[in-house]
Length: 289
Image 1 (cartoon, one colour):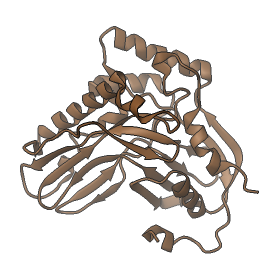
Image 2 (cartoon, one colour):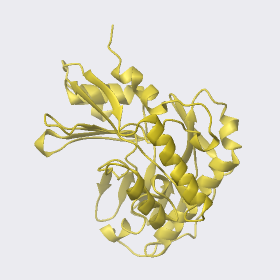
Image 3 (cartoon, rainbow, N blue to C red):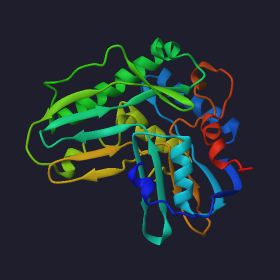
Image 4 (cartoon, helix red, strand yellow):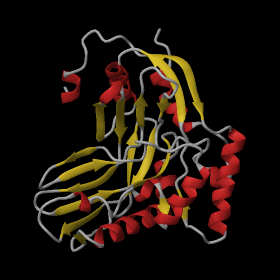
């Protein structure tokens, strides 16, 4: 039994959705926004932009019961459950490692890119020139960010061929970078240079962030930030994708869906429209018999 399961309520009120998720974009608005991104790329402003959208919903029940169902529906390696002040809750089942620093000085990053429905053949992802090019861009970006102040990539290596992860209804590609710290001890300066993660911004990072700020209608909040732990000698932080934020009462109840919850994961190719993020959470929100 996982440690978090030992603390789950024995008779938790089951979580029930009382209002279906609603995006901040209409389909038309989203397609127009994607076209704006494509225009920026065509003009040479940027190589890659990670466009996100927020879904909001309302529900009732025990947040821990919700997280239990979330972890069963979308299991991951870097999950977190945080009960914060004012009754707010963050529930994350992120599969992505942002930054790990070990007491030995070993530094690891492992960005993911190219998420697709699990029904797609894995080889289609691993042979996709677009997806692998995007992944390589982000790996280089993270190496450069960290190399400025904290890390020498003496142990850098590519995972070859590109590795894939299957997460229930999704598959994704990833590559790992390994290096060594140039100084002893961990401080927040270790986290600032690569912050926020390149996989959820784009490249070049600063310009991608400016475009995101222009095009996304709401601020991301904790979504696409990082959740983890830090000590004097080590740290481990995820990328806060596949993350829910619950706020009791009030008018602001953001529901942050899986990181790749786009109207289409293949918007750039103009293929069929699929609400991948919503389909991933259908099992979570569907009424139980």
